[in-house]
Amino acid sequence: MTEPVAERIAPAGTVFAAPDGRVTTHTPRFAELVGRAGADLRGTPVADLLPVVLGARPVFAELPDVIDGHTVDGRHITFVVETLPDGGRCLAAADVTGAHAISDALRRARREAEAANGVKSRVLATISHELRTPLNAVIGFSDALTQPQPGGKPLSGERVREYALAIRDAGHVLLRQINNILDVVRLESGGIHLAGDVIELSRLIEAAVRQSAPAARAAEIALQAPPCTVRSWLRGDERRLRQVLGHLLANALKYTPHGGTIAVETTLAEDGDLLMQVRDSGVGIAESDLTRVFEPFSEDDGTAARRSPGVGFGLYFSRAIVEAHGGKLTLASDVGAGT
Image (cartoon, rainbow, N blue to C red; front, side, top):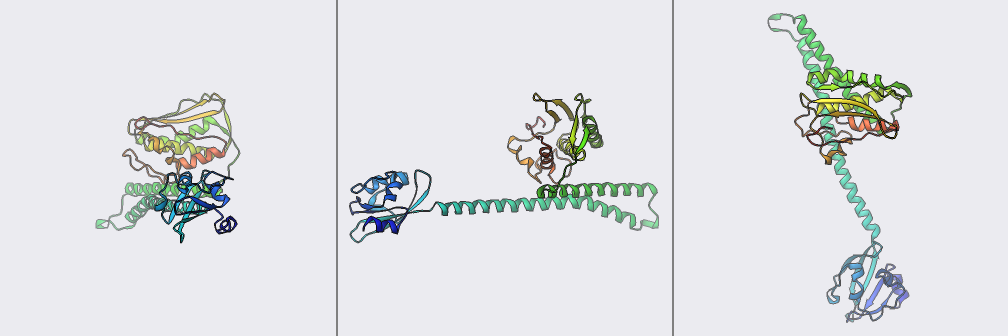
C-alpha cells in the first residue's frame, strides 16, 4: 500500500509492519506521532518506536487490538491494530483528544450536578427548618391565645402579653430569614444596588454593636468596641455595610461560648486603607473550611458551640457586599483559638 493511500485511510498516522515487526511503510504523520518527523522509518522495529506514545516497549507479537497512548504534546492517541494476511500488522492511529475532552467534561458536569443536587437538598432542608421553627412558634402561641382555657377562665393579661411578645419575636426571626434568602437571590441575579451614602465610621460601628448587644448579654459574652480612633468617613451603602458588620458579629456570637469575648477594632493599614476587624475567642474554624464557609448556605453544624439559627449565607453575602464597595473581606482562624 502506498503512503498516499495510507494517509487517506488514517489521517492521524498509519504504519505497516512485516511479520518480523519492522516497518515496511508509514505515513508522515505517524513519524510525527513518534517524534521522528520527516524521517524514513522503514526497517525500524515498530516496538522501538511506540514507547514514545505508549510509555513502554510493547511486544510486537502480542499487540492487542486497541492501544491507547499520548503524544509528546499531550494529545490522546488510540491505535487500532489489524493483522495482515502475511502475518504482518497495520497500526492505524486516531487522535481522540476531542472525545476524551468531551468525556472529561461530561464527567465533570455529572460531578457538579451531583454536588449541586446535594447542595440543593441541604439548602431546602436548612431553609425548611429555619422557616418552620419561627412559624411553628407563631402558630403555637396564636392557638394558645384562641383556645378556651380550663374552667373557661380567660388568660391573664401577663400571659397574653407573654404570648404576644413571643409571636412578635418569632415573626421578626421569620422576616429576617426571608429577607436573608431574598438578598442571596438578588446577589445571584445582580439585583442589589448600592447607595452612595456619606457614612460616619464610628456611627456605623456603634449601630451594629448596639443591635448585637442584647444577644451578647443573653449569652454572657463580653462585646467590646473601643472608641474609634480613626477619624474617617466612608462613601457607600450604610444599610448594607451595617448588615455586613451585623453578620460578622452574629457569626462571632454563634460560635463563641459563654464567658467569651468579641471585639470590634478599627485601624489604618500600612497602605492607608481602613482595616476593620471583628475578633472572637470562639471555637475557631479548621483551615480546610476557611474557603467553604464563604459558600452560600454553608453551615458548620458539627460544632456543639453553635447556638443560633441561620440559613448559612452571612459570610457569602458579606464578602460580596464588601467587594462591591471595592474592599476585601478575609478570614483568619485556628481551631480553639477564635476567629
